[in-house]
Length: 101
Image (cartoon, rainbow, N blue to C red; front, side):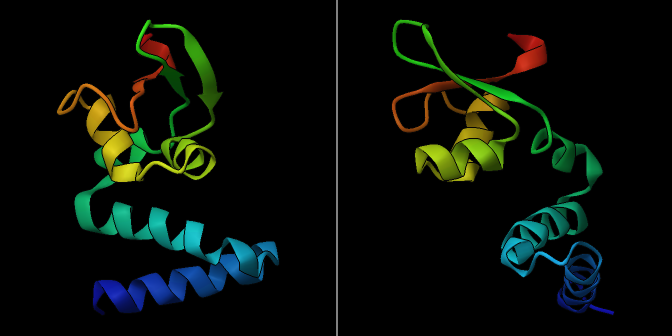
């Protein structure tokens, strides 16, 4: 099976299990990340993140990178790069995993 075939099958099963078709895009994101880059990278998307402004003042805590991305309208890839240390800011904010803050 290809990654796309596995992804479609798993999304279908998750939608059936949860009954939440509107969450299919979220399931797809998690599944594709897990299948293409492995579980170690996938786990970073599961951790709580803290956003801080330019002065270092906490502006919010989010249950995951994807949650922060949706609520702040900042691409999840940009937030992930900040959390991993590849960038300093995304959308003018700094991000850290809560356990390393």
